[in-house]
Each structure stands twice: as C-alpha cells, then as structure tokens.
Image 1: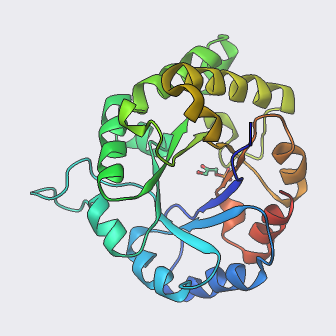
Image 2: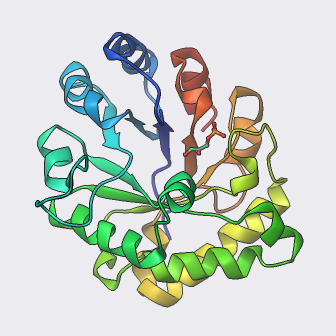
Length: 247
Ligand code: 13P
C-alpha cells in the first residue's frame, strides 16, 4: 500500500498583511525539490493576492474556513465558491479555535466539508481533545467521534486530509510524545478505514500543535504521521522551510 504524499500546511490564523506576501514568496523560492505538498493558508483577505503571487510555484494556497452555504444573507462570511474563485485549492475546516469560539459542531463541520467538495477545495478537517479530556482518558473516544461526525460519506474517494491537533498543544510549546501521537493517529486510521475502506489509506493524517524546526523531524517520522499543520512557525519562511525539509 502506498503511503499518502506528505502535506505540510501553514495556518497563518489571524496574522499577516499585504506585506507578508513576501514571506510566502520566500517559501516558494526556498522550497526546492521536496517530496511533500506544501500549502499556506493565510487570512481569506490575502488568498487572492497570495494565489497570484505563488502562481506557477509548488506552494498551494488554502483558506481557514468557509460558510456551509453557497450564498445568501450571511454578513461577514465567505463561501467555498468565493475561496476557490480567489485561487484557494484547500481549506482548513473545524479548527478547534472555531469549534470553541464559534461553537462549530461536528454536524456543521460536515456541512462545510460538503461545501468545499462542491467547489473543488480539498478539506483539511481538524480534530483534537482538550487537556481535561486527555486526563480523563477520553482522547481516543473524543477524536474518533469527531472524525465520524465531521467527515461525510461523500468524501469517499476524494482528496482530503485529517489534522490531529490536541488543543493543549496549540500555541503552548507542549507536544505529545510520539507514542501518544501514534496512538491517536492509529485510531484515526482505523476509523477512516471503517468509514471509507481501501480509500482511507490515501488520506494523510497531519499532526498540529507547536510544530517547530527543532521537533519537526521527530514528529514527522512517527508512524502514521502524514504531514503537519503548522501555526506560529509558519509565519516565518525560514522556520516553515526548515519544517518542510524535515519531511
Ligand atoms: P501552533 O503551531 O502555533 O501551535 O498552532 C497549531 C495550529 O493550530 C495549526 O492549525
């Protein structure tokens, strides 16, 4: 069975201005002959400009969220069609910051996945437990429940990724050890196989949460880790490139 092509995606979150496009260009210039797919997901207002700046390079541009509907009276939201129209190829969905701050449920995330599929965007669907859930021994139950609830059957055979981001590791400098990562990624792989059969083997399972140049190689070589979703360390081209090179 071939392993999926690794994906290293940068999530800029609510960071970056027009001047930050230079950082994305530096990533494109430095990326070289990597075996990984590389993506940057800037704030939506930069997607169009960044897509144009990175045209013809190896670096893909993605969004960080979309509305579940295609159009309508949803002040302040953007649709999957708009994101695709602006040049995005991927979209992060169900990030824990959105699940927490905007009360996004698994059901809503699944509807957003369908919106992404309607418009040819490759979803990166995020899952992950809180520290309290981990301490209570519920990490696997929570994460596999999110996988089942957030991934609609229509994904079968489509290109998508799952990102395991333990909430307690995001922006904290803390990371699970490789045994903990492998346990969760293994459970996600088993769940994907139950849901999608053979096609599940082609889904990269990314790790996210305090990935940086100093820990990237160790994490990326853990079993079933098919790439990384990188927050803070994706904002600086040199750091992000060091992570790409660790694949
Ligand atoms: P950090 O890499 O800053 O911990 O963020 C991880 C994350 O949330 C990526 O989506």
